[in-house]
Length: 331
Ligand code: DGY
Image (cartoon, rainbow, N blue to C red; front, side, top):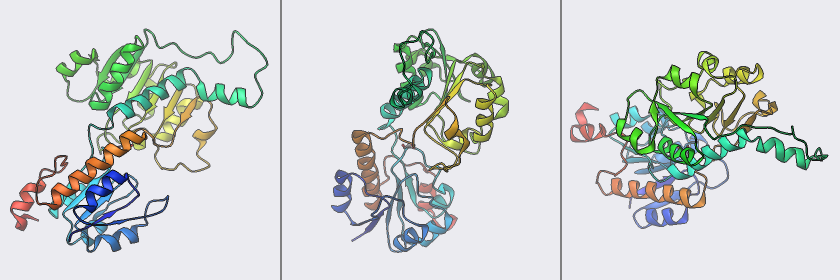
């Protein structure tokens, strides 16, 4: 029987699917497995089900001599050395399409929270500072008629556009390739990055982390934003230069930020962002609803089973692997 190693406790429904098709070992505990444990487990495994917290590098992949599939329970896959896996003829899969609403909900929640200063207001009440109604207390920003700039009008970006429409916002978007059909369906106007940065009152990032998107928002870009603008990041931390963002927030180059993702996760206790009132921080919970996480795990299990049964898994992110499988000598 084939063996699958799952790096965290995932939804029972997903484990059942895996167990019907393989011998399944699940890492227990609240923290991700150490690299050594993954290496040990992968040595005789055909399937590896991973989370975004697992750095699946060449060393791990090369220990998986029998590996057929690495199935990430996430839409992003920057935690996996896809190139090495491809050369080794290993399928790599992800879980697109099932987390768009949950992630867009969170992005929009963050947008509202930072615009209306919700964490500050909550702490104000809890710490007994509320002495009475005050016409100038905790004034935030309207959403109506404000411009939302979406960087990356993919599945999640489009969902946030739909939500923003209901709040009567104007929507512009930037991505390298214009998408006229999507523009029409969600009512967004295309803009260059420069234009988007200078026109938006809120900017929300929805791009994968790649060598092109790393530090996409740095000092130069932050300087081009309105002083009254807010930045929302639910994509990946390194898409924003965190140091530059901190400086921009302290120097008033932008008004606020709401971040679900960070350079280093979890962030360290001395991260200076923790001290800023104009920042809302959440611990990478974009897809964290019971229903969504269950759907993601089930999809990852289905991808794994397909691959173990020698079929091309539906959510394959390295189709080039098919060439290597046809011609193993090209490895
Ligand atoms: C993903 O799937 O990439 C998300 O970041 C998980 O929450």
